[in-house]
Length: 172
Image 1 (tube, rainbow, N blue to C red):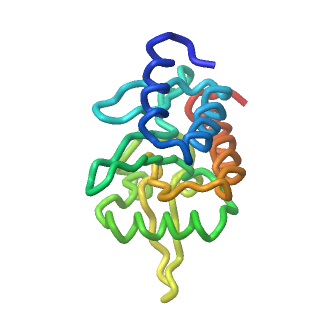
Image 2: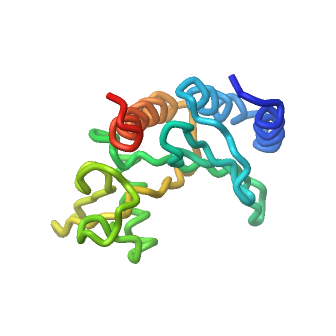
């Protein structure tokens, strides 16, 4: 699974901190990422998952230390289509919370992501009909991960992975 002992130790210490009831969920996510070649790396207080072929972050995990200690899981799924209302609501919340993270690629002010902008930015159409976007280079926090989310999370990881391989690593 992991390439190095250091990576295994990093993951094991994280899994010990998340708590018994959700540990299997996070272990399943980590296994999915690992099987696709995403390696865990310490990044400040986060664990970032990047692939050697494109070096783009697809996911990150950390422990939030507010009033109580809770796990944080964020996933980049900007190139994905047809996700559930739960994930559409996550996109909407990110657009509202971070209005300044408008994708620069739409106005040709950014060249961080490969591919046409409309294929890798988060978009949401609000009830008033306004369509807004959020930069697709960011992994969005998936709050309160449950067993019900697992199939969709793994589907989104695989879909984003295929996009990143094709457009960032130029592998079809």
